[in-house]
Image 1: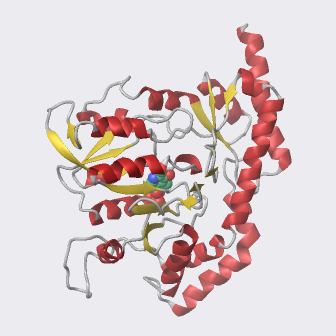
Image 2: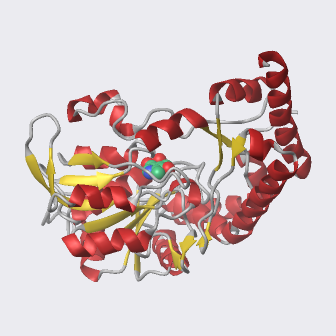
Image 3: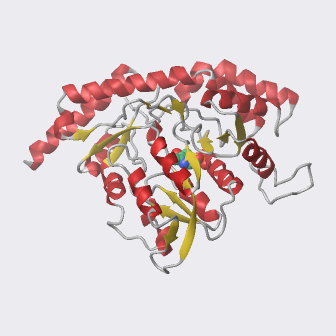
Length: 391
Ligand SMILES: *Cc1c(COP(=O)(O)O)cnc(C)c1O
């Protein structure tokens, strides 16, 4: 039996009637752009995340881009972020003509290490290019709550306040995640969410949302997403076209009502894996489990194992029809498009090691016990045959 990494079909079958009705309603009122469902969803997401405002946009990537634009990040600025994330995090920084400054991660959580952020700021908030020696002002920090677990935000905020820089939380994988009782997207100046289908709250296409407490930033974001115009056809600033389709908002409102139930199912699956890897002895010999920080609500967008000789296990799982993926195979500081920044292999060792040793296994809410057993048995089989062949 094939086990996918994510089963969107199973999710759709569960809520098909409600989804179809929500779409039909939009088809009947025909307000496809900024229809009533968009503002309703914005209100609900703001409540869910514990913030004052939420502004919908076209994607998680745009959420980061618009936030940095609203914060005034532009050509010649530097922005500190993690190299161990999806490309969009750094892509948004570069698209504004700013320079991403990559700092290493905590090897246990895979999230940006605040001590490494501090090291960059020890040069008094000035970033010096490795190649040109050119100096640029650091304007922002973009921490990423990877796999569904939040960054140590109190440490990040303390640094940000001390150096007077903006914090844009990339919470694309972390809707509903908490640290010390506070939700993802509610601590930094901006919180960026993605509704890409594979996120815990996914739509049926692209979509995104920005959460903010500041009234001025919220207003600026609402203007930026409609080409900087207010009123219509009067352009105060240069923005872009980045709205959430009404149909997607309608779909997301149905799914949001299910989100906590789905998150609980992901957490149960993760706990089950944890205990199973412990009792089978795989834990001590072969795998490192996801590390959950005390006081954190991990929402498990991904359940990521760390193993030696990862690629062999990856091939074995694929050959056995078990969905798996590497998030992410190349750290951003070593991506070809960033070669001009002058990073080399060995510069950020924790991120580099993670790209070589991690892999995700299925943790989606609809995953049945029989399927979980099959995943663990397949991993056990790999290691038992491997030890026989190699030793
Ligand atoms: C998915 C994701 C994004 C981008 O979201 P899109 O909606 O696909 O543009 C950004 N950052 C992280 C960490 C993501 O996982």
